[in-house]
Image (cartoon, rainbow, N blue to C red; front, side):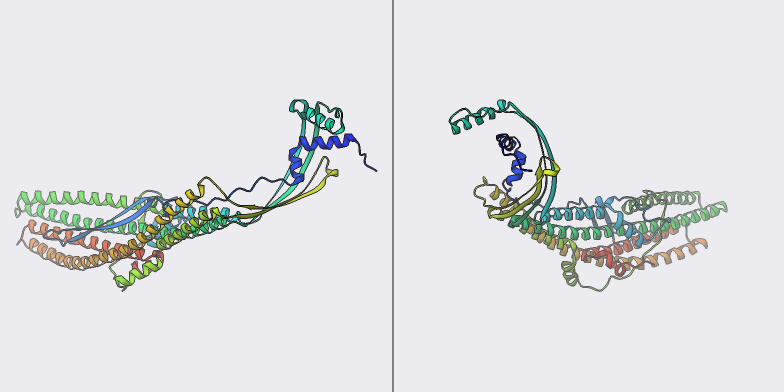
Amino acid sequence: MRRKSTWGGVRLMFLITILAPEMALAQLGARAPASTSVATQLPLSGRSANSGSVATTQTPIPGATTSVNTINTTVQVSGTYAGSSPSVPAMPFSGKLSFNDAIQRGLEFNLGATGQAAAVLQARGQSKVSRSNLLPNLSGAFSGHYLTTDLATTGIQSAISNSFGGAFGGRGPVLPTVVGPISYYDLRATLTQNFVDLTLLNNYRSARDTVRANEASMQDARDTVVLAVGASYLQVIAAKARVASERAQLETAEAVYKQTAERRATGLAAQLDVNQDLVRAQTERQRLATMENDLSRQKINLARLTGLPPNDKYDTSDDFDYSPAPALSADEAVQQALGGRADLQAAEAQLKAAERSRAAARAERLPSLSVSADFGEIGTHFNQGRDTYTVTGTLNIPIWQGGRVGGDIAQAEAALRQRRAELADTRGRIESDVRNAYLDLEAAASQVELSKNNQQVARENLRLTREKFERGVSDSVEVSQARQALASADLDYITALFAHNLAKLNLARALGGAEGRLGAYLVAK
């Protein structure tokens, strides 16, 4: 069937082009100007936002006449490392907590580790977003339009009449006041691709280095969790040993009191001696209650670190005797730490990311090339649609952007300088950690040896004094003094053993890869 070529058909198509700008743009392939790429700005500090820390300190305490000089070792766990999510639903608990079980629960459920793992996932997502700007972007869209308009109100009616009238030497065609309804659809697929854009390329490289930095920070967080959980476990062991020692002291004090009371009944001891031994027994009972309270608190702290219910209704199953640390000089340990510490690797990756970010900011002054294309169908009815397509290449040449590029470069330079300072500080901190751990280890080892010898002597003195007391050649005062000396020696040994084991754990963390070094540094009985 031959199409009619009338003025009405031409007029209708002309009006559709005027009144339907969306359809006209689709047919002509018009596109908005390409936006200028902007460099991704990194935060000023590249260090992990994981707010938390684990610190161990040794404070020397002068000993009394019956005690050696001791080292008071404390462990401070703060921030996210002091909390956890419940671990029992995923890892059933029998009521006995081993050292390795505590470490594994901490690595899986401590907030210090899980928070950094979430940061890695977030960084990977941001890296994918940056990469997507370099890859082809394909999208599809379907739109339907239904419209009417008033030509007289918009001024189109008079403008067309005057134009046609001037062209034909008379009055132009009379157009209707209201046109429509007009309906059409547009089904289209669009493909865009950035071919040359160094800003986007360096943004992606920076994001990729940030992922590596976060992965290294996650490993460092795991090392910190090992230190936090391991130190807390050692604290529980030391608290249990103090409770056991105090119970033995209480039993001795009650036995002495009973013997003195029996001697008083036979007229061999004064009431003053009975009263003094009773006070000593009651004092030991109060000390035991205080130490049991401290043990319960330490167990609750350990439960909080490992995702167990926050109570003391469980027991630890492992114990650690004295064992020397692996033979390694301080200088060798420093070199190992500088080659294996995850926080140093994270700082180096953060420095690379900052360098890429600065390169991306400088590249904002360079031209970029992109291509976009679309193909689709447009028409008033689905059986009357026509295929249309557009291919557009855009060369964007920055000329003047109001100083924005200079501002981006200045921000990137500031972040880069901070990253360099943090990297240098990290190297110094690692060497400091290793050498301090060695000093603590040497001091604790010396204390263990001395306190163990003193413990043996005090135990022998108590045995001899009690024999003299039972034979009636000494009084309860000498027995009490000997008992106090043994109690001090026991506590000294417990404190020294805890300090030595903690120093080995701290050294394993200072070297990096603490999880893999535990078997060589701490061996459970």
